[in-house]
Length: 157
Image 1 (cartoon, helix red, strand yellow):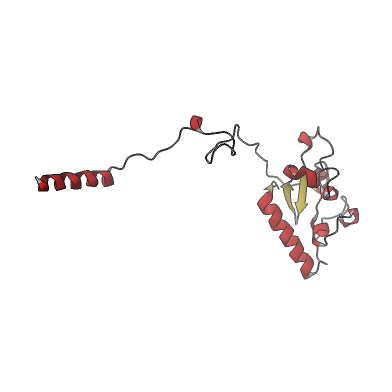
Image 2 (cartoon, one colour):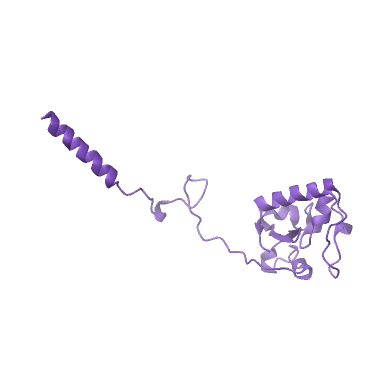
């Protein structure tokens, strides 16, 4: 009798190893649609996709957040020839915000020099600033700002 019980146990354990039960996968209908309600959740709708493209300074200027009728008042911001959608930070980059000067423009020089004045912006009808005259500490500032934007906002060009 003991051998039969042990044999049954070995067979049962072997079957569990060879044929494990399917993993538990919650149905999407059972998931909350708000991250404050549950650890596992799904959004109500798919987030709007962002088209990756190349921008000219003149095209970028239209995305300064001043016209709510232009793509919902979207705000774009460029650093070292990379364009970010900073609409989520509208209170900082939108009209009246501390960084509003840079909205719809390439902000590289101003961020590197920690200056938020309009004279830090290169004219729209001239070539893009190559930043060749920045000091090492200014380059460090610029790289720090760039890593902040890389992790916080969506890159779109």
